Length: 367
Ligand SMILES: [Zn+2]
Ligand SMILES: [Zn+2]
Image 1 (tube, rainbow, N blue to C red):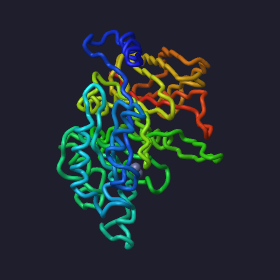
Image 2: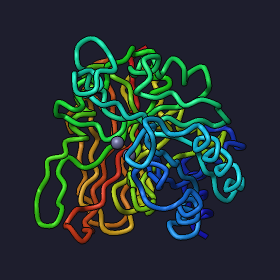
Image 3: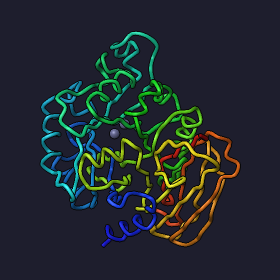
Image 4: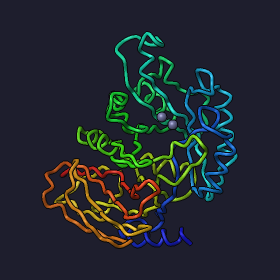
């Protein structure tokens, strides 16, 4: 029922697209741990929860490449088992499991505390790496051959995998997280996003993930947006929506590779965002002014829908209804900009955080 509604929603707005491309929204979680690193539960527990309890369409499992519960490196037999399990749990059209790991770079690798590498201390943060097909080796942040984002990306690119920037931070620990050659944005395609300000047990935290990503985009960086639970208790949830033609591993990877994905915080907000009939995640060249179209189906009343261009809000709606539609021509377009959509609903979780959604950006250039 839900699927067919979403399909109808997209079919209605896909005018001008080939009839056979029936895009749908599929919900997933891009990041979580099991007892094979520092989480709880088995791989079976993880996938069973994702499929039967969280009702996800797809899920990535991503244990640390080293961790508290593992030797210095995730044993190769665990990586092999992970790949066996994702094949066992994947049922095309029903559920897709994806084998990944968390490339866990630590600044202490460059210090006398743990002197693995020479040279200035690097703060590369963590990155999730995942593959559509079997890969026999795990490219660890503690291996000199893969200890920088560019070295990692070069190898993952050759093997058809994808990388995401995990929990981007504005502090020192994330200082070098975007330190990679821009051409690797074809493999380091997405970044995790959360609201800039979060409430937790009565306290306010300035997480500043969206701000960190906006600043990266403002510098000319290319990234789409995903979100994840990063669960360590096996409790995955719908955090990332991909727009794909079918529920298979190749189709999910195709969507992620083209950044045809968006992130949510809490509710499963249905979002469509296009510029001149192009999908989120695309880089386009146009004549004239960008025509921005958005349609939002919320799960509660929507407080605001905003268009962010080059880091600043250029257009805002306050619908106060569960559905909203936006059709806006950017007459002040100067010839080279990125745009994304942010939605905030009125509903609140037990800590007081409102539900959010962020489209991946669309990059627009004048022809
Ligand atoms: Zn991490
Ligand atoms: Zn993690």
